[in-house]
Image 1: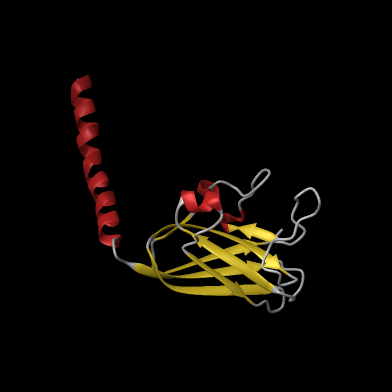
Image 2: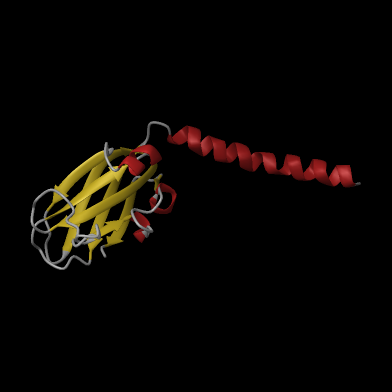
Length: 150
């Protein structure tokens, strides 16, 4: 009896496994539109510098972004629309470069004095959060992510 139950459980789960694998196979080569909305900026001065990462390795290094940009701020908000992004996992890190010096300014202890943020509004301890905390999946024609800066 125990063998029959185990046999039934194993085989009844197979359609779910193959359906899941099929979704992954079907999404290869597909692209979507990503909108990143940054809110909570304390002024319209300067720009918001945004990095879009698609791997844990580049995320940890903090460079070699998949895509990057500087965008203006209107009424404490910045919006970046990115077209033709391949389906997959991504994470965003950004900072408000209020003085347009192309770097995140810090105090003498290395603590940022300019606002910053991460996708999922993830938080890190003594640095950026892990890629897994900040990552999201782009698996639809349009995905929107909102980030509130600190």
